[in-house]
Image 1 (cartoon, rainbow, N blue to C red):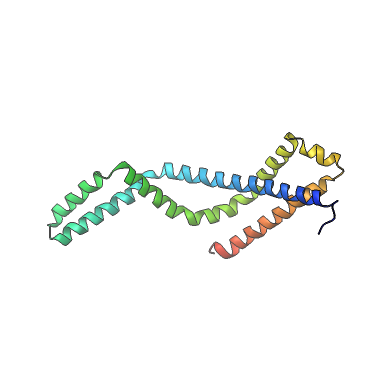
Image 2 (tube, rainbow, N blue to C red):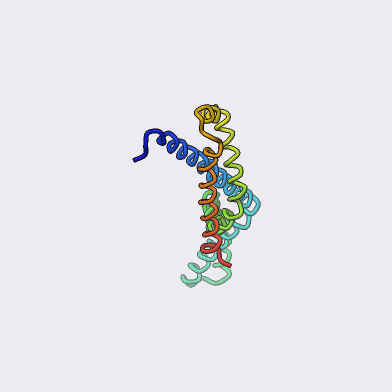
Length: 172
């Protein structure tokens, strides 16, 4: 058990680590969501075309299995693809985009982790200064190096995770 004089320092370490991790991971999630939204809005036609083509193939195969002529099956399939509801096309397009992007997020996280850690550090320091917590820490006699130690340790842990991501998850 820690002596009573070190307990507030451990609480401060946990608070700074939690604040830094929250800021960094939230910034990473927001940037990934923005990139996904931009790609989805620019390529919605491609994603929805895949849904319409799949519906057209399914109807065409069903018509041919029932013994209809190829021309009537093709016309029925084209009509079915045109009559698809907006919600069905939208959900299908979202599913296609998510299916394409989930492995890309692993790669994207490796590229964006460094800038997100810098941004998380900036937001962390801004919050500590804005709420006058940094003044209270310095007034209690704790040095700035002691405040920076949990941030540096957490950054090294995140960089280790990034190295493992790049070596183990992302293919060559």
